[in-house]
Amino acid sequence: MRGGSWAGLTKRDLAKYPFLKKASEYVSAFGLDLRDLVSPTLSKTLERALQRVLDAIRFGKVSPRLTDEDVELLSFPVAVLLVSLVGNEYLKKRYALAEAKRAEELLASESPDKLAVLATDLGWDIRSVEVPFGGILYEFSLSLKDYLRNASRLKDKKWKLVNRLVKSGRVLVTRLEVARLLSEEISSKIEELLAKRGGLKDSIPEGLLPYVERIREAMSELKMGEGPRLEEVGEVLFEAFPPCMKAIYNALHEKRHVPHAGRFAFTAFLLHIGMGIDDVVELFRQVADFSEKITRYQVEHIAGERGGRTQYTPPSCKTMRSYGLCVGADELCQKVRHPLTYYMRKARMLKRRKRPVKTAEGEEGGQGGGEDG
Ligand code: SF4
View 1 (tube, rainbow, N blue to C red):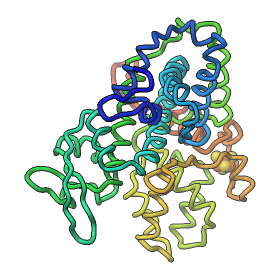
View 2 (cartoon, helix red, strand yellow):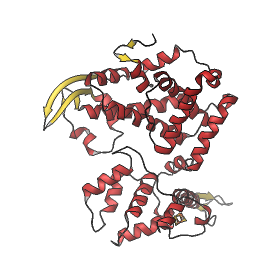
View 3 (cartoon, rainbow, N blue to C red):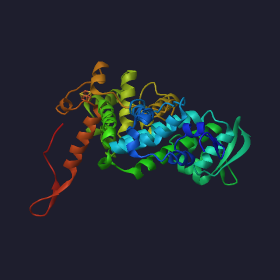
View 4 (cartoon, helix red, strand yellow):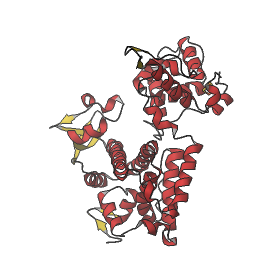
């Protein structure tokens, strides 16, 4: 089968989209064993797999490298294996998203026929149509189920079903919209793949340990381990904001000037602690020079919904200081290197204090004292 074609898909397609069913059939034919990975013949594959994961950590997007199709194709399951071995939930999500962004870039330049073949491999019910409407050419229709499963993950109003053209129970979409929706599907599929693999810590072959360590080092350089726990904080607690973010918030509230770096840091911070795009836009409404269109665009960009689809992380304390945005430092500031870490710790302290505790007499009361930021 090598060098052939798989129901309209060439080997180059499989290298571009290594998460396809057909791609895993192709890889299975190699009969790879974990021990093979450290053999010199697969060194390029292993290096490329590591690069995929490092790209995800550092840039939030895996760059396509199609010069050696076998290496590009085989390195994907190996990268999935490496991510599983690291066993960090945040990395799993980030990696899945970074691969999806790589795919979206490639999908955007595919022909309509190829897009339909790829979508079908991913299990979609997609049909080619030709419906010009309002200056836009809709080239596909999707089943409601496939549309909603993926569009519901996108926050822009244009994806809401009420804002879509629906014909005979099917949603009309453009070519670029198909690429965008497919990237959501791909991200979920890769997350599922990683969830199935779970943590494989017990079976790390010795030869793979240095690769797993390099990934862990890259994560700690970017303090990535802090991300997922933040997402778990849930509700947004203003009392837990670090002094720098409170200062920016107060300045916005009082319609004082906040430099671009401050607005960027504040926006990225809010999005990371779980605030939705609409709420962040609302928050900026109180600013003197507010423009909904510009603000929404910028917030969506920082959230990774536009442009290069990189979700930006707020700057570290060091960078905040270099921008003159650190107004610290309270006691907790002395112990952290990132405003998100501050928020996460303070939120936990506040939640612990609010939790009712049983007294010796069996009555419930608020838990006082404890740590203080
Ligand atoms: S030390 Fe860090 S968290 Fe504290 S105010 Fe400065 S930048 Fe913010």
